[in-house]
Amino acid sequence: MRIRAAVAAASGALALSALTTPAAHAGEAVRPASSLPVISKVSVNGGKDTVLGTTAPKTITLSVTASHASGIVDGWVLLWHGTDSDEGMDGALVPAGGATCRNASVATTVTCSLTLTIDPRTDLPKNKLAGSWHVLAGVAAKDGSSTSYDSYSTARVQRLSKLTVNAAPEPVKKGRTITVTGKLSRANWEDHAYHGYTGQPVKLQFRKKSSSTYTTVRTVRTNSTGNLKTTVKASVDGYWRYSFGGTSTTPAVTTAGDFVDVK
View 1 (cartoon, helix red, strand yellow):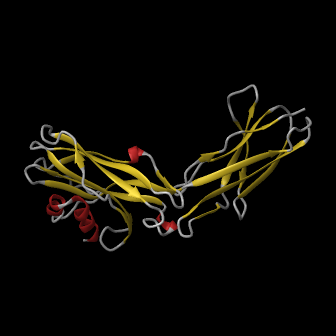
View 2 (spheres, one colour):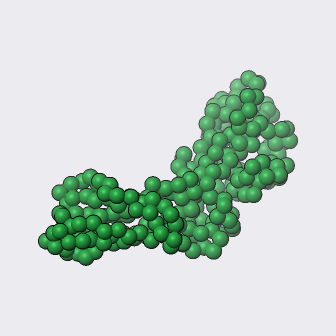
View 3 (cartoon, helix red, strand yellow):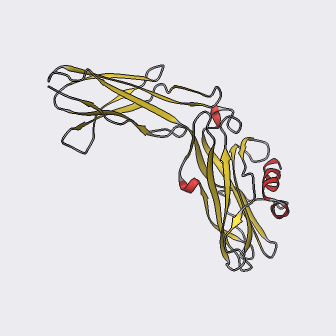
């Protein structure tokens, strides 16, 4: 199995021996017997979505927490994308080194951590890889027993989003029209540039100069190039901003407020 070979290469001989037995799959009723290690928690990037732009690599932490009467001596976590871990996998993000297991020599419950560096130029060649990834996780106990899941949970890997705003003219006379423009774009992992995110709902929000709270005025949809444009009547001094709620493939983003002085 290709995905288990990748884990073995990253985690060493101990992981290789553990992975020679069939792995469980998330959602199955079967769970490890009491004599096997029990995984209680798996974390990817501290529970946050992993967001990457077009060129800069990002390093995140993966961890697996498990317990066994004899203790835990090794753990492995990686991300894979696709429909099946054997034949339907079209992407894998594998830590370059083995796990560090804290207090492995004295504790029966141990957390093993790994470092994963993702380079969008080499690890994410297709935009279709944005979204939900399967999290493979496993551990090995001191007595040689092991537990492994091909898909213990899922985690999101997303394309970085950018959003701009400009409210004009400024200053403006009370009652006159303000035009608020902007653009929503996101990273394209295939050509390493940013392109407009089309057809997306973005909230236009306003905050009075004397207030600390923004209120949504209306929702504006991006056009075929990701641009935003709408008009409002000038009434009081304040700040205008755009706010995008995000999608499964692209994170939420909100601009800073653009101040307009109303005369």
